[in-house]
Length: 297
Ligand SMILES: Nc1nc2c(c(=O)[nH]1)N[C@@H](CN(C=O)c1ccc(C(=O)N[C@@H](CCC(=O)O)C(=O)O)cc1)CN2
Image 1 (cartoon, helix red, strand yellow):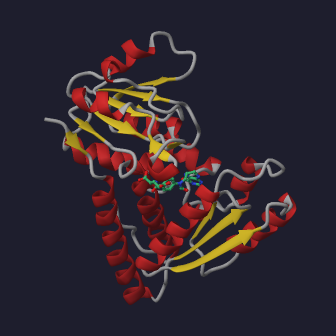
Image 2 (cartoon, rainbow, N blue to C red):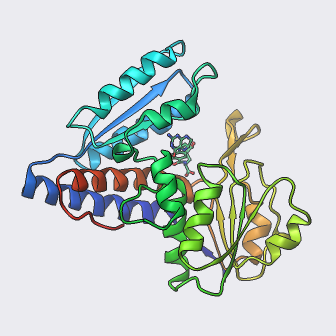
């Protein structure tokens, strides 16, 4: 029987643990975990995600600030805001919502964020720490970290001897996901648009992670019977109920669920984990800044 991995439930569990850890930190040190979320422009999906981040931060008992900037904000002004947040002792985590408008160099902004407050895990320092397995002091990007938690819970075993295929090589998901799986002793292949015979490669995977950004690309006959399938895709398609758009992943859920041992749905799989892990990274950052050993999630 196929297990549908309930990302909402696991995310709620993580958020509860974060809230308890925050309460402990506040009681023992007086340090209140603080997060700043910065959004530039009016992308509707980004506005929803940023609002959810603020709501979850409040639920966790954090000090939470949002900076909503107009679309024509200059790169220099955004750099100046990030520098101000770097210097603010009440802020332990800084997140600049992506995508940014085209006239702003996202890479430059990410590298301006202090690595110690980079709760997105995108700064070169954190990328390097993940790549070299320094996980105790790194911040790991939230979506792959959340996906990894779902894999660990679904399998309940060490990943040694298992083949993992990650479809997609983005800096935000594909590459860090591959590193996390490698650190957990899986044998990892990263596939992309130029990979030959992708269906056959996918069929070799005990763990299949789809992070390619193409709606329902991965079909049921690409899935090894019993595999764990993690769908990172969030694609909005026209033609949902009542004229609304419909959300689908990168996996053709109906056919893949017939083959998989465990599978994440979209919505309700990896998405909620992204925000839960952001809260986890922020409380970890606050523990570190207070000189306390940080909890693990
Ligand atoms: N600075 C960052 N920007 C972006 C990131 C990121 O990790 N850091 N990731 C994505 C967007 N994202 C968080 O920011 C995000 C995406 C999806 C969800 C989520 O809960 N999805 C729900 C569906 C919600 C919906 O209806 O749209 C689900 O899958 O169940 C949370 C966060 C890009 N930008």
